[in-house]
Length: 132
Image 1 (cartoon, rainbow, N blue to C red):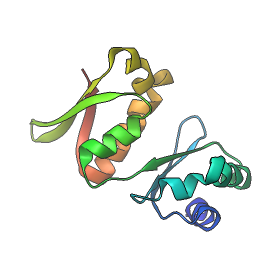
Image 2 (image 1 turned 60 degrees about the vertical axis):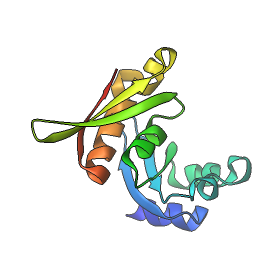
Image 3 (image 1 turned 90 degrees about the horizontal axis):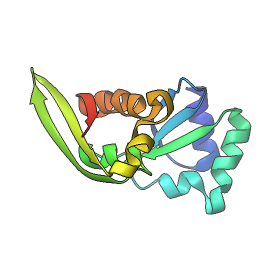
Image 4 (image 1 turned 90 degrees about the vertical axis):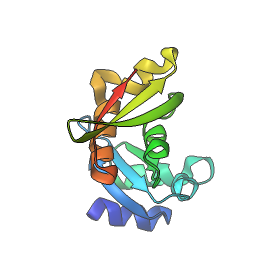
């Protein structure tokens, strides 16, 4: 809560959620339209927040549309499409990613896809994210 309040006061962006990554990064999910506000001109606000919080920071823009939110989570990987299916009573997002960006979408030791799974479950009730 303290990190969220500090980040909001430094950037002016509204934070919807915040998670601490396994690698010590703090991932902030900001309200739709607040991404530019959070980053600031030339990245000035995000650098200032990083220094004040003392951790590496990542900012993701929220969207009410699950496919758009998932694309934001996996950026800068190029997502061709997202298909949400139901299997065994659970929603699963099947993501079509450009072949050369597959490693970027998964991330080192699977950190990016793991983060996407956590946030998709929290915000859209999607239990799993798989790449095709």
